[in-house]
Image 1: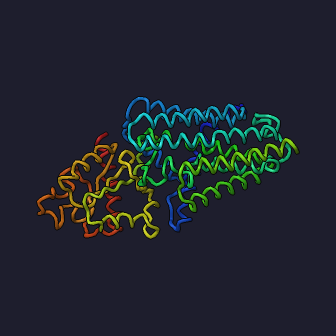
Image 2: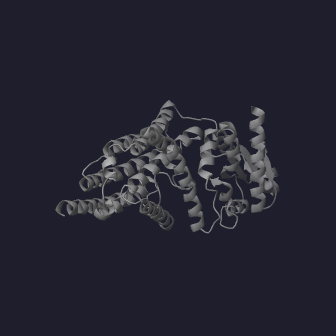
Image 3: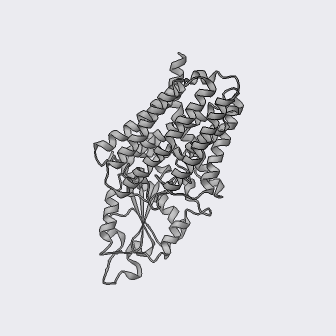
Length: 282
Length: 147
């Protein structure tokens, strides 16, 4: 029974929470720009509307890729709530990320092609770092299993402060926020239109949006694992992290992929290795 | 239930695409003014998308000429149903002061069906927002008629 409830949370509650979070995100962003902003349920309205639109797809590959992206993201999120293995979750979400790119490559539009290439570079940037963060968690908690990580007695953040910073970099890339928002520019009337999402439309765009909510919840879940001993502090940590993301998004310009690769790999690899050595020696 | 949810959401999330069909930029500035903190149309869920495949409402400013009528038609055809078209300004409605020029086809309705006309030279941002709200009512009706 416990597993049924957890699976329900992962499959149904998580995307709704992700949708509300996307609405809160837009609201706070608007306030930071001294605007009123849309209602908090706006992201849900958007997706429902998209499901009601005519389905114009380029070819059947695009449809398959949108569905695989959604299913992989939903599966990864559900596995997370079922307290499965971090490495398994990692590989499942990687499959989804790659299928999103493949769907974008199914069209010949230069915007979606360039967006797909940039998205691939983003995947290339964060995947090794995510593995390193998981390895750090393994060394600190003694297991890749989330149920074991939940059982630790002191918060992982105390042992893994640098790994947590690396995780916030990954979160920024995964949420596609500035300075790393070059695969799908957030405002769709810029140089790349909507990048990797340009060719998805109507219900298929809605599928990728729901998948994105799953991924957001999954990554915030990984952040939450850094403070599992106290619910209050876990909530504070998550809210502070997400607010930091918003401030970074609103104060940074969009950079290039070369800068991202150099900067995130340089700093991210260095910080995770230092944290690993610290764990190993200490 | 799902259908009524979608129906309600449609009016709450109009994504607009703006096409400058040879305007003098007067109306374009007013369209963009709607997005500024003063008018902030995002509070109604309006997003300015640059992609016809994501758009629900097409805002057209300016006169149509023989060069860009194909572009206008192409953009309209790429938008998935249900969709609405709003012609903005005197030029979008009839061709305005340019209507007798040798290269001008006329208003937007010479090329694609228009749902709402927003008058003015240039149209005020308030009038454009009203036009979008009217356009949403129109496409709600169209959806109901279609089934």
